[in-house]
Image 1 (cartoon, rainbow, N blue to C red):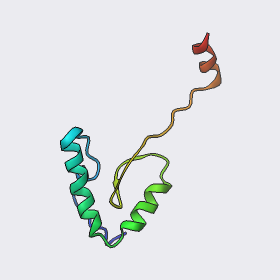
Image 2 (cartoon, helix red, strand yellow):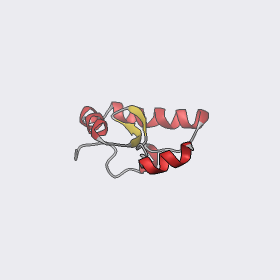
Image 3 (tube, one colour):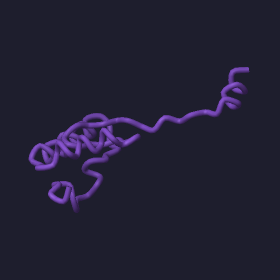
Image 4 (cartoon, rainbow, N blue to C red):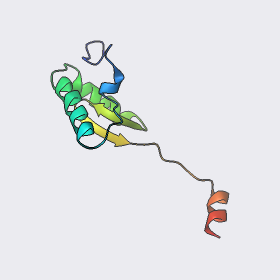
Length: 80
């Protein structure tokens, strides 16, 4: 993905931690750049393969965190 428009730019553009109106504006700015990107479809497909990611990928905001698995013995102790 050498032709990606995000290459060499500040990652904060695509991985903002802003919330509310500022967060929506940040996502809109990132998506506008992605809309012009020649590899946006490949970028989105790549993000779909990641086990956990948050951010704007291929023009889409993705919020998907890794699942935390609790060992059975710990679950059993918690439920008692």
